[in-house]
Image 1 (tube, rainbow, N blue to C red):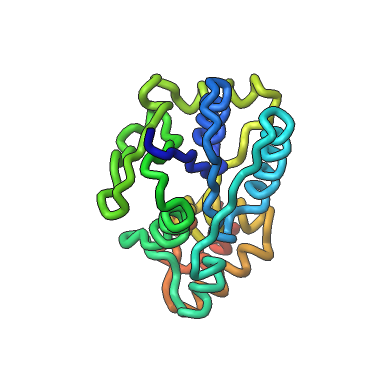
Image 2 (cartoon, rainbow, N blue to C red):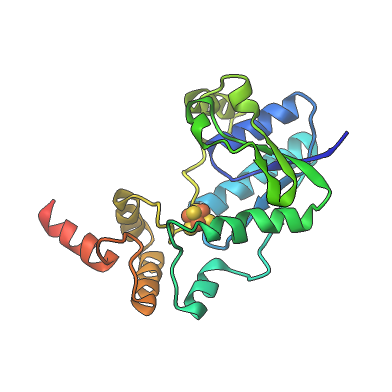
Length: 215
Ligand code: SF4
């Protein structure tokens, strides 16, 4: 059988998928590609989930990183920001570290829910990797995933993405500013250094401050 791994993204879907696979006896390596830029809540959830996995199945999450190191530091050095259209950040910090560390794993299990099947890209020809989507195949949606996680006595994980993600909604940036002002300040500093904006139509500093007065 071809070698397989679980691509764990630390969000609701991939957590539920991991639990389901393990319940079914599919004890595959669980791999998390760490950009170094997740929200602190996500790192806290990963620690908690790992404790649970250790207790239940004596398994640890394998953390891999890009050869370029921490994503924020790299963009800072290059005076750039993650760019929406190119999505190079996903390739360099999420996909390639996994492929490089598991070159013989040609099947990647990915947690995409049945209600988001449009996001499911079945293969990465460039890396000769086939992706499997057990949640889609069994019709499991996001709400079902929450129930699976709760059934294990675990908290539902927070949304997972980098704190400098250009796909983050303004609402999420607002949340970042109030819950993690240090990280928000880092996002603002990165924009100013790059001379480009994460929300392409205006700088964060202006959007969030203006927003404060116009809401
Ligand atoms: S979460 Fe956003 S910034 Fe981070 S790797 Fe994915 S697309 Fe890039």
